[in-house]
Length: 369
Image (cartoon, rainbow, N blue to C red; front, side, top):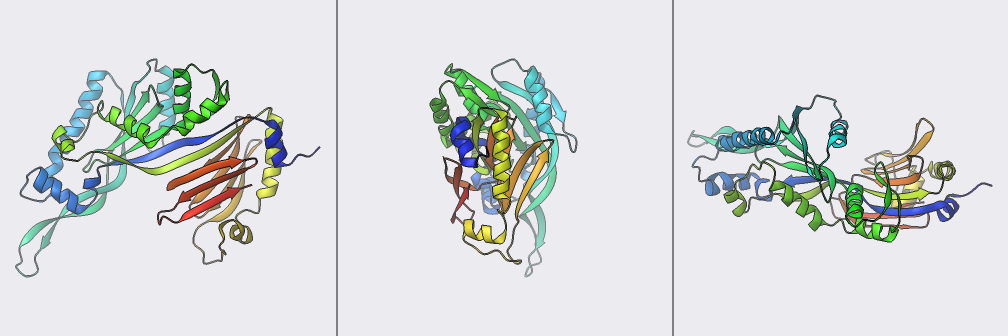
């Protein structure tokens, strides 16, 4: 007998888990994100008379040298990433051979474009005198990736730009964090590739996922900044030049484990049929309360992508994207990537409701049947 989406979810879901999947965070020193802040660092803090980025060149050399000494002293491989090479595939090979509870797997180096400061010469129009002026620019510089394993968070990586102001990235996985906490509490579970298939205490598992807070993530950063080479001295950090975090990208997921593979196939047959029109003007107006015309900026579309015999549904609305797919033929995974700031996420029956704030701080709600 044909089954609707709601019937499949009510009768055949044996485990439901929602929370953070992946997080990609900016790592930056707040006081060095403006030209005025850089001038204060060079002139007032470091005591240089000339306001020029040439004054930070010794810091850059010392930072790069400290990385090279660190990998040599600890026997850590230093790799040069090639263009088009998948960094995660390399990390997976190193993780498979890694036997310790935590440590640095390897350090990778790649040239990438980023925002930097440079010094240009300017001339006073009245006196004709030449003076140095610091401006924001972009450059192709070396970035160092520290791929690590943490006893609480599992695999993650920290990326440092080797050029002033040495901004970076922190990438972590919420499901790996949950698995480590289950192991620490000796709670039996079966794992998916990036998720949990079964757990003897599902409510405790959901509580663990809910507990992945900003303070825990900040503690992870502080822990590893103390262990890894650092561009700023203790005096710099004491003066307030310390790294902070902001969300660059977050992927939220709802995983609904089904009792058997056929339930997933039935679900997708129905969900694709019922959602093919999402992204059309009338449907966009219904969901987002706005009329879409040819002049409306952004992408409005629904795509069904089939990998072999496994379909996935992708719904795009401007910078918003929702993806549903059948994970390993055992669970329904609903993901929502590229969110600026999440305010709430909830699931009821066969619907997912996600609320987040855009860069202009106006709340937007997404409701997926």
